[in-house]
Length: 515
Image 1 (cartoon, helix red, strand yellow):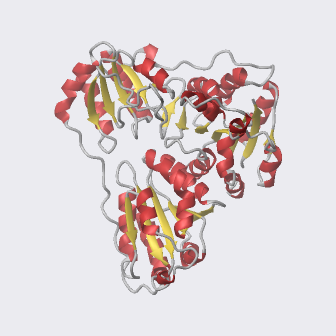
Image 2: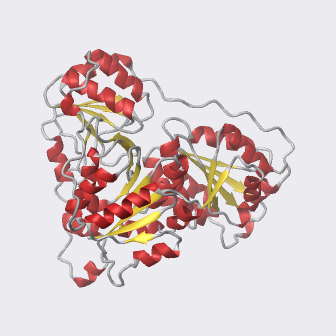
């Protein structure tokens, strides 16, 4: 067999199931190798940012890496924004990047770039194959490092001749998995003592927001009286009616300061003290109160589940107070105009149980998404790295990881245009994704930020840089051109019909909400 086939077999032995790809000439032998291995599901993205975003969504829902097959430095560069988001989400990811043949690099062909340093800027581990003989071992290492708890980015650079050469060796056995590190158990009594004091917070995040973890956190809160708090943007959280309530740190720095004001103790599990998204004149960057006692009980790469179990045992409670449990949906609209006041409760009431939500709703979500805490239990995936254009491809990966669950994308119109090609992949793969686009025809969040950063007085030219209404995007025709049926409901009745149909039928759809 050739080395490409051997590499794919090595990765399959490790557990690889899906390859998201936007390949080029240097990867043709790897493409052929995928065809030789029917265990692999190949998924084509029309832009590399779709590829990396989909791999992130797949990792968040499956718990393991997919492989991204990318073309040289420009291909990796095009994927960078959603690789960044995946890194902040602690998602495992393996990028296999084809490069020029080893003997061709010296000629500085048009697509030659500093691929090694570009890879290092986007990855936790980088390996470059130098021969047919080292490719499989590097593949093993790439997989091991990517799937090391809680998840990392691995990039394997494969020169074309290292891929097409004949492999005469034996497929190596997978390397041992790198699991989470243990916490310092001696810190548990100190942490419980801190949480028992007035105005204390148990702050959990990272990989520890599943149902088991949030219920343990609620037990601790019931026993100690502490608040339960998580980050503004999380990679995945289980939420909904009948589940424990977690407060989220507000996005804006001054609101976050007020939210955390007078906190006496903060115990962190799986995440770090919150900081402002950006620097603002006269406002704090580090948002924890200066006087608060900070206890970093468990870092993101440590065993947060064990930490929560130990805290619960030490606190001495296995009960959850009723006021910590989220109630169900109330005041469901049945008629009238569809707007931000009716859409939130309507969406919450119609979401099926076990829905997966890919949220990049930006400013529109501030009035809509809080209602969904009262929906039936579901998983919520957020924009962890802040680089917009994640929501549509994230939904692709989530749908491939969990094909029996409905997916809903909540997306601002500006961010959606970054990776609109994801709709084509949704259609091609016949994925059950209901895409809701909030169309306010502007980068609304940037209008807010323009004032907040203390910019000088602006005029029409500056404001035009934040506007999407000249020309307006025709979402209905754009979606249809990419193979996805589209709708623009204006009333509660119309939305109820279209949404209910979309989430219960195979294949994707797009619903435009004009704001």
